[in-house]
Amino acid sequence: MRIAVVGGGINGVMCAASLGNAGHDVVLLERSTLMSATSSASTKLLHGGLRYLEHGSFRLVREALHERRWWLDQAPQFCHPLQLLLPVWRGQGRSRHLIRAGLWMYDLLAGSARLQPHRWLDRSEALAVLPGLRADGLVGAFSFWDGQMDDLALGLWAAERARSLGVSIHEHTSVDRVTTDGVLEGPGLHERYDRIVNCAGPWAEDLLRRSGLTPRHTLDLVRGSHLVVDRPLGTGVLAQVPGGSRIAFVLPWKGKSLVGTTEIRQGLGDPITCSDDERSYLRQFHDSVMEQSLREEEVASTFAGVRPLIRSSEDPGRATREYALERHGALLTVFGGKWTTARALGELVASRVA
Ligand SMILES: Cc1cc2nc3c(=O)[nH]c(=O)nc-3n(C[C@H](O)[C@H](O)[C@H](O)COP(=O)(O)OP(=O)(O)OC[C@H]3O[C@@H](n4cnc5c(N)ncnc54)[C@H](O)[C@@H]3O)c2cc1C
Image (cartoon, rainbow, N blue to C red; front, side):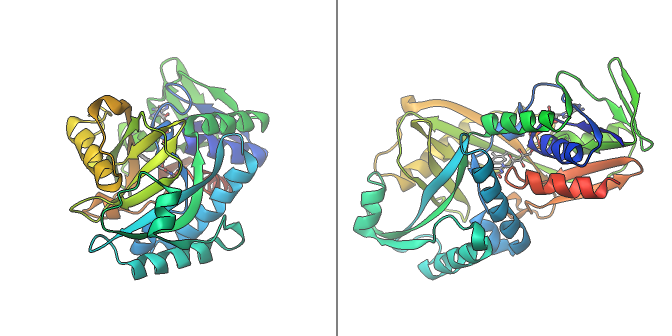
């Protein structure tokens, strides 16, 4: 079949690769450049998502843990296992028993794809692993492992892989409208395909509406920002933000550290940048976790992306990170998803497209 994929983020690229691998004649159309939107603005973790266990997302976590292994095995030049600490401070945050139960389940769901089993570190062991950790009230920390990626480089690697599977990729090619019988329209573009796969990420719902179609799913657009901090770090740490139940990260990143992230609902036309409020929220979070507070001049840069979440909860933090497919005739639209699970999504799309 002749198939067009709209959107050159990680989901579009992995869908195109799976369709190419299944023997279809595939073109991928990206209005800007590959990986220029959400897929290069992530927290850069290839992970199961430990905190999704609290929402009962066992299927998603299990799939993501197995997909994490796939990326680490296939492209070790762009991703690697990363040790993470989950500290326990006296009288603060989730209980030690709850975290232990979550990590036990995380290891179990990973099965043969497990990296290293979690373990408890007492106070002095935790401070030896991460000397900058806030020592005041520290009881100890759980240590566990996930993957860390260079999302831009890994995404471009995935695009090269798609090309090698026969996918023809066209950047700077915008799609304005799609029809249910497979016609794709844009500036200088009017082409008919057997199938169209809409992988426009945060813009997927908008493309349907602009095409006069009524989607059954609604996207919840939730911005997440990060600070890149001029301070090297050996090990990652995740912790509860002060005064809330959200979890945020301080991670080593290319000789610096990465502090993220936030969850701010926004509209499609709003700027995708880190606001002053997010900047101070992230600095406050950093200072609640690390011994030495962050000076403004240490913030080397910031970046932000918009999560295309399927609307499922009033609280964006509880919204599902699952993906869903919606069919309108010859058009298949992808809603939601995570970086880590993009390959599994691609396989599902390839199995459904026929
Ligand atoms: C702050 C943040 C942190 C995250 N952290 C992680 C993490 O650590 N691990 C993880 O697994 N996931 C993470 N995610 C989720 C993950 O980044 C996203 O699920 C994923 O990148 C979405 O990819 P996508 O291809 O659907 O969207 P995008 O990457 O946004 O790609 C969509 C593409 O479609 C193009 N496009 C849109 N409209 C058109 C059109 N009309 N014509 C042509 N092209 C069009 C856009 O230019 C864009 O390039 C995070 C997300 C955010 C925002």
